[in-house]
Image (cartoon, rainbow, N blue to C red; front, side, top):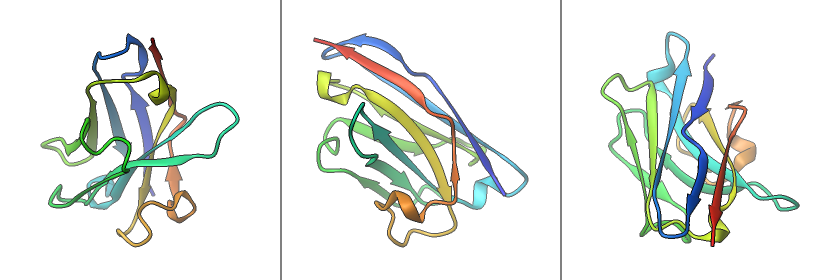
Length: 124
C-alpha cells in the first residue's frame, strides 16, 4: 500500500511556473506507477501526466504536453510535476495517484491510491 501526499500548489500569474511534488509513503512506494490528475470546479477529474516506476516512460495529456514535465526523484518515491507557461484554464485541484502498472494510465478509475490534492490557481 502507498499513500501519496502532494505539495507545491499556490497562486501564480498567467505565464508563470509552479512545481508540484508528490511523496509516496510506504515501503514499496518506489515500485508504483504514478499519475497526476486535475479537477476544476464542476468538472470531471482529468488526466494530466504519468510516469513509470523507474522514470523510463512518461505520458501527458494533450493540453499540457508542451508545458508540463513529470519526473521521478532520486529516491524514486517522489514524483515532480514542473508546470511552465501556466494558463487560467490550468486552475484546478491537482491530485497525485498511484497504481501497479501503466494500463489505462489516463483513466482515473484505474488508480488505487490517491492524495488529498493541492490547489493551483492561475490568475489572468
